[in-house]
Image (cartoon, rainbow, N blue to C red; front, side):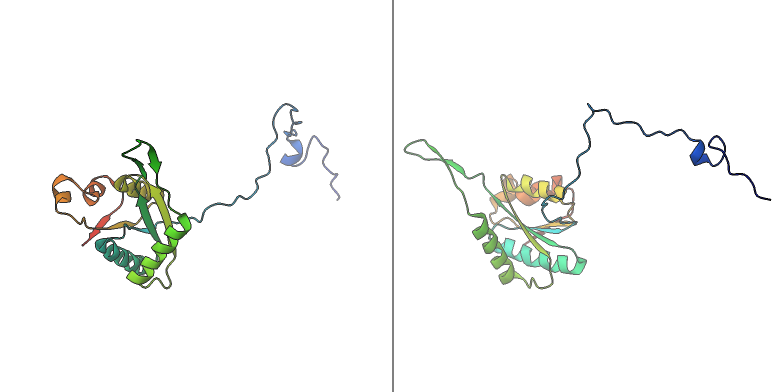
Length: 180
């Protein structure tokens, strides 16, 4: 026996539900289609090497490169420049020191090539302006760093009045490795 087709009032659940689609309110803004934007390359859980050009920073860079290779993580080289503003003594004029970002990046990559074998490493370079300790801690938190590797202070008075490694050991949210 053939069963009769269900009427619109009977039948499956989809047919019995009222149509919940509403007409769009002309005053309500319509969602805009998402267009892909140029975003910076994401660096997930890198090993960060703070670099300032000193001998101990070069040792720290070599250590950080080896650590990144062993962990299979990217290496993020960070150079923190001073705010770059000073007062000219004769005129009292405030002068800002600017550095070419491209030449700075080339210098950092050359230093990496001289300090360690960078083959098979994903290397990124970032430059910041400000206080080295605060900027290194901020970038380590920003990228969820696995480790922050820096060189030991050069002068003995840093041990007396405080130093970048001492501040980072208290405030950074990742392991801090100080290389002599």
